[in-house]
Image (cartoon, rainbow over all chains, first blue to last red; front, side):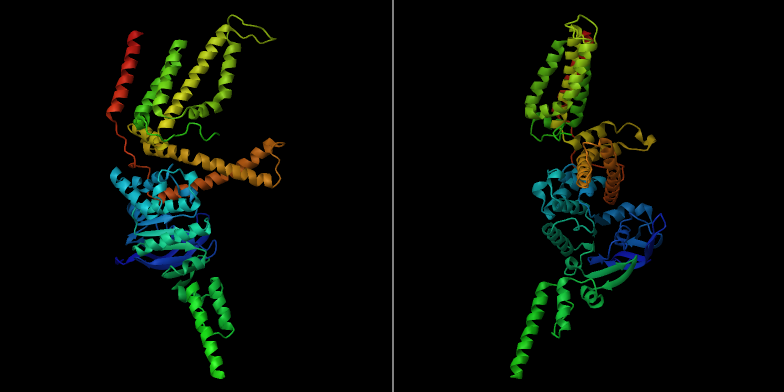
Length: 284
Length: 258
């Protein structure tokens, strides 16, 4: 296969069967560009987690192939390269915290890479600054909140300097405030040029951020496209704001029904109201 | 268990600054000597040196008493065993109980020895980060050919620091399972056996799940169980060599005088 430098991850006709025989992925094709923000959505058990665990060679395809920057994940000699390129943050902050203090945890990845001590120190400090946890660096995990631990997990991945970071339902165990903080951090990482793959069940948190939405159902891709295309095509699973706009449109108001941000909806509604006012004046 | 038992107390003292390997060697030598001591004056010497070191460590005395407390039952038990079961001159008789003077003396000596062992161990853990202990041990056993049995010194060090990290997590899990079951009507006081069995099954399942999640997280951060470096570099300073030299002199003199 030709190696295109702009393609970060190429998934070709991927199928995966668990050792017990259940088929969890079937014929999945996705190509993810460098610097792209892709959200993967779908209900529990649709195969989202199974899919992303292929991206850094935690799982091997039963059929088809996954390649990262042209490196096939089946190539055992490339496994450590691939895992360095694609970092992964998981759902439960508690079970991915390895160190006895925050800085030791962030250092875990670079230590595994066998980097010299001063380089590890530099990377740990840089990563802690990026997630704004510098002042907690000698804290033990039991003194950190769930949100802080999850940001620590992000720092742990950043310290390995990956090109791409996969977030697997990282906000599902957090309170709203910590969730927003994590989302802000992720957006910032995306702006700094990282490729982001974000698995979630919450449509509303991801529509404003993602370049592309992939919606999955029973191990297959059901929809793939931009957030606006998603809203235009999928009927049921939409944010509250979008439902409101749809209802207004049904009642005859001239508004777009593919908006999801409060500000956009506000502008649309104001515009529609002005229109109604103007019509009334014209009638008189 | 008491969370302060053998815990690390961050301070800036000469003892904290020593290399963990130096402290490990010192702890081993001291332990061997303490176990060999049979006289009160000898034990007194160790007690005095403990107090001196504890003073230098800047760790407050409460920490050490927290480390002694959970072991008190054990100490009392050992003392009583010796008091009543040693042959010799009888102090008094109450029914079948016949404490002896010899028992009193050996009991005191043996109990004091154990107390000193715990105190020195807690001095070591109070002045050394858990990771540094693990890393120090890793460096000391790196030359042992563990490969033959399929593990590396790095595996052992990682296992040790993971145990330190996850014991509180598992205790927390156990507590949650317990509450869940009490809230569903399990009477723990009247049915101890049942409460143990109903707690243990979900505990094991949960621990395996935790271990599984942890393994995946570690693997995706490139953990290979092979050579790895550390955020904290171990460096033997002048003081470390001084301490080790001092220990060697004492050991040498001891054998010379015997």
